[in-house]
Each structure stands twice: as structure tokens, then as C-alpha cells.
Length: 431
Image 1 (cartoon, one colour):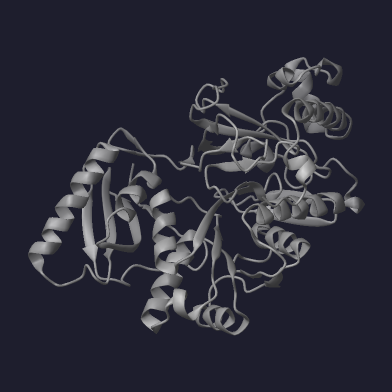
Image 2 (cartoon, rainbow, N blue to C red):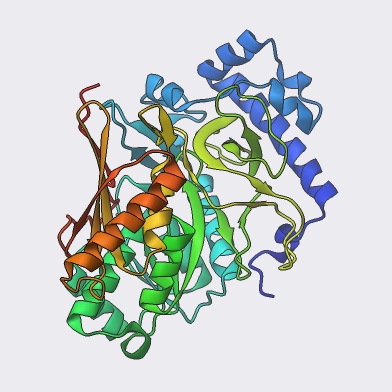
């Protein structure tokens, strides 16, 4: 077993919790001194820094929400002087006002360090060539991966998203072994290579992919692995914390290790805010223990997951999270039924006759239509085959989401393709 920082990654649980408490107390003291937003929040809760005597006291602290970040835009959560800020990232929002996310030099270095842990945990070495297909710019995803891979010693190709002809040429010319990509673009690349007559197993050196930046299912992971002949690793990141590298699968692929020396984790009931025990599914809440420029207390991520009880055979003592099953704010309500888009994806991606692209369209008062691309092999033109497949998809979806959608089968390559984050849901309802 290979480690990047074996002492930290295999730290005894008692020592880890002692370190967490020390860092939590320091962070609370800092925000109470430096951040007026938290000064008000702590006063409202009746909590002073000296009241944090154990990790259980974390629950006495206030939640921080997505709305808080927007309301304090641009610098209301900054905990260091502006001249000490090294980098600004933002994340987009639907209200027109983004979230400003600040990094000090120590934050940038630490984010790269955690990313290096993640890469080595999956078997990446300095001999690998990593082609980074995420968007460079205000989004954190590309740069944190880039710096982490350079720490490991990889040759990094900052390809960015899109331009599939060039992506393929780079893979061929420089023998790319690892890609960092959104799951939807990975599926598109598989189709693109197929049409070009390129067999990834025969013609390329690819062996691993790190996928993220959008929700996807285990069935989609398997579809990417089968199409490209590679190992695909689940990863989890959040711009409000560090970007990518918060949690990652090891080579055993039995949950994502979250770096608990940097983050305190809670799972709560998203409706009540009450804590849930290990193994129960709820909303992930994170407290940043090492962030210097913009430390957040009890940040409600809106991501739905659970903590996996018990140790991992890789020897790392940091707890593991199940893959994200969706976001609390991604939930659709159709005809009074709560539906997560990943439920629909799970059904579609499990069917061999279904292709790699789909779209959920909501119209009228509450009508759901799912446009589904057929696989090349499944598009044989026989009406009876299409009718049978359509009925099977409707029946499986009704069993999964408890309401009957319309299903529209379309030829391969019909639906629009996004080379960045996929837009799977179009909500045109007049409710």
C-alpha cells in the first residue's frame, strides 16, 4: 500500500480526534475575532470560543448556508487582510450573485497537498500523464487537481474541456494515462472515439479516470469503465471548502475517504437539522479546520450521503462517505412525488439498449417527459423492439420514482451534448 503522507493518513483515531478538537478551537477563536458575520452568529447562539471544550460542542455552533455566502458577497466572510489573499475563485448561482471564495498561500498549498494524497491513494505515480479536461478559471476543479498532480510529479496536460479532436490527439501523442473529466463528457468521449474507430484499450494508454463536478450514478461509472476500458474513481469536492480533493476513493473503491484532519463531518436530517448516526443517509455538513482565508463553520453542503461505518482495508483511518446520491436542492416534485434525477439516471444507465445521453423535460402543470438516446446497437429500426424497450423503461421508472413519465426514444447522437457540466433537467413548468 502506497501513501503520500502515511503518518497522517493512518493516524490513530484518538490522536486524530485530539487534533480535530485543537484545530476546531483555533478556528472558532479566529472567526470570532476576525469575521463580523460569525461574531453575530455566535452571539445569537450564546456561544463563546471558550465554550468549545469537546468535539460534541460543534453542534452548539451555527450552521452556515449557501445563502449566507451570497448575502456576505464579496468579502463578508474573509478572515485575513485582503492584501494576504493569493487567489479568488467564484461559483455560479441562479440568483445572478456568485459566491466569492478566497485562498491564502497556505490554503492553495494545502489544497494541492490533499489532492496529492488522493491521487497517490488511487495508484497514481510520477510516471503518469494526467490530462485535465476540467474548466480552468474561476471554477476550482481544474487548478486544484493540476497543482496536486504536479506535487506527485505527473506530467500534467492542461487541456481544459471540449475540442474532442484535440483531446484525442493529445491522448495519442503524449500517451495520457489518467484523465480528470465530468462523467457526461467522459460518456461523450467514448461515443466520439467509437465513431472515429478508436479502441481505447488498443490505441490509447488510458488506465484511470477521476470524475466529478456533477452528480452521477454507479451505473454511469460502470458505463464509462466499460466504454473506455479504465478504472473510474469517485471523488468529492466543494469550492466552498477547497475544491476537489476533500474525499476520494482508494484503490479498494469501497467509499470515499474524507480527510478528517482538515474537515469535521456531520450528517443531518436536511429538514430538521438534527444529527443522524453513521450509516443513515442525510445532508453532509462540513467544518473547515485548516482554511486560513475563509474558514466556514458547519457549512450545509446540500449533498446527500452517509458515513460508512468500520475501517477500510487500505489502512487509512479517516472515515469514508458513500457516493453522493444527489443534492437536497436538486430534488424535483412531480405530481406530489419527490424525485432525484439520479434515480432516473440509475434506471437508464443500467439498460444496455440505452445510449449515454438523456434529458428530463418538465412542462405544463406537471408533465414529465424523458428523452432517451438509444445505443448504436439498440437502434435497429424495428418498431416492435422500440415499443418493447419504451414500455420496459416506463415500467422501471414508475417502480423507481412512483410516478409514470412519458418516455421518448431518440436515435443516437440526437440530444444536445455538453462538454462541460451536463444540463439534464429542463423545467418549463407553468406552476
